[in-house]
Image 1: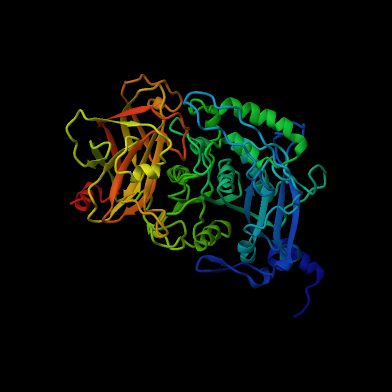
Image 2: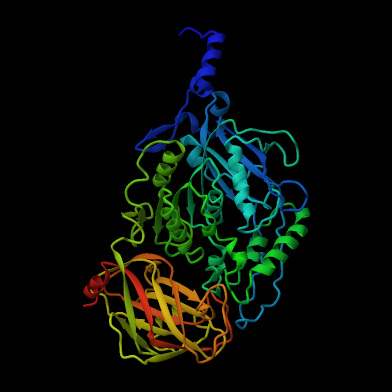
Length: 607
């Protein structure tokens, strides 16, 4: 082959660009998915660098715009052949380490409406610097023709600023990094210097993913509407800190972390510059959070509204693949559904994947691959078409979801269940109302956890209502709702509701879906509004209506569906001294279940 004269080469480069002339390696696609490119899979040929991206905010009070620590992993060919590739970007407050078991939770054993004892604060002791932030995502995506970028969120690791746990700076930090990836000259080689670095190897197409807090930040970035962020795959994201730490006006902990609150999480992640912590602690934790979080009433307010991404979705345009577990009692499944529902209403390309397990759990890799291939590489693979929901059935592997037209299942319709007295043993529930005027009373006692109450044959500490034994499986899909008409003998009370499948299965062979169908919690003081509760008048009846957690579950034949109403939940709520009495008016209480096949299916299943 004849050599090209320099003048001709210059002309070709000018006309066609360096990418088309120099690049010999290109991404490979089969069946709509990016494949491993042999020339890109050797990690010895990857370039790893770290840098700092400047934002347009100053949250640590030093008079300078905060800079976020960023690392980049890219193939050698982006340097030697002019190869440009799209970016998979992940951000986190956890990369630099956390406080581990050190954070001190709030005391939960006190009367409702009373302040808890002061919480002892704690701080992370940094054991070293981490110039390369993370290795996550790299092995999956770099060999398939992507560049992988990580950043530590504000006030963590080597990123400047202060953590705010859902504040605007966490959204704007990721936005600034994406702007750098799309050509802005806000990248620097050092945290304080003036030498700039450009993302010349980026196509300007960015996708984000991550789990839990790391899954929240892709959504946070997307709500800014930043150009270049084409697609996100949040996995078990916290989409509202109110919904994480409160429930319908009730102070409620995330599962497994009784007594945690937003200021505890602040302490847990605050791994940044120790010299900036006094200012950050005073400004964020001890002022903004202390004045806004309100552990006494549990009401929704402007502080919580500012940390609810559903309120910020107007600018969002990134294609959304949402993932969550129906039995995630930490970041509960409502977090994903509320955003998915809003995204599809906006006309944003959106799909949802739900499995039956607990916290975490990404979609099958093939599904993620097709999503990023479509929106970052521009391959028309049809991923946006077809079923909108993928549900892992109870005994299936997470890699084998069943496709459905959507979630909730379009074939589901609401069915009302009414209650028949039976306390302190079990009453019943069915499709017809019983004789009006029946009331039953329970006595609060947090010493008995929900699982024990559900299995008890006879107890005054809960009310339990059972369906007939199912003769056929019953498929619930959607958001169950309940209205409880109740009176309390005290001005404040917890209200907890579990929907269970009985008989209870225990032991090594028990599955996470065997017993608890879904749950919900509410403060009766907020019966009229979650923004303002009012003390209960002892003996006066109130109607409290709220949603339980979304679910898609097939209850097998031979089981009974049980509605359990009790007061303090030992795993989730504040724990006042036992003795509060709740009296439930059965005629004014109704459970609404979304059932595939509707009322006719229920009638068939309970013959």
